[in-house]
Amino acid sequence: MAETSNNTRIRVVAAVIRRDHAHGYEYLVCRRPADKRHGGLWEFPGGKCEPGESDLHATTRELHEELGIEVVQIGEPLLIVGDAGSCYDIVFLPAEIRGQPMALEHDAIGWYAVPALRTMPLAPSDAAFVATLGD
Picture 1 (cartoon, one colour):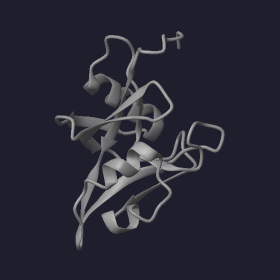
Picture 2 (tube, helix red, strand yellow; picture 1 turned 45 degrees about the vertical axis):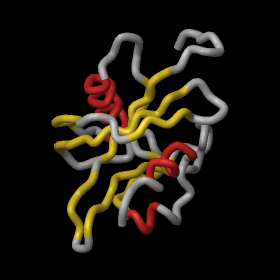
Picture 3 (cartoon, one colour; picture 1 turned 30 degrees about the vertical axis):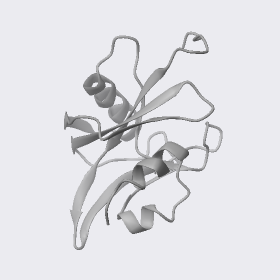
C-alpha cells in the first residue's frame, strides 16, 4: 500500500455478522495472527478499503479472502471508530453472508454472544463497538 500523509485517514470495514441463538444473537469474530497489529486480539472480520472502493465491494472482497464466504448484503454503518495510534477509521457494518466461515487468515474464528464478547481480549475499536451492543 502507498504511504499516506499524517492526516490521511484509511477506511477499514468491519463486518458485523450475527446469527440467531437460543438466548439472543451470536456474533462472528476472528483472532488476529500474532505478527499483525493487535496480534492475538479478537476482531470483527474485514479490512482496508482500496482507494475509490465502496464499503460493499471491500466487505465482499475481504470476507471472501479471510473467511471464504459470500456477502449477500451490508447495511448502513452502525459505528465508526478511529483506531488510536493509527490512520485507520474502523466502520462497523451489519452484513448478511452465505456459506460456512473458515479461518483462512486468522488464528481462530468463533460465534459468541455479547456477554462472552465483553470478556474476550478484543482489539480496541472492536471493544468500543461491543460496548454499544445490548445483551
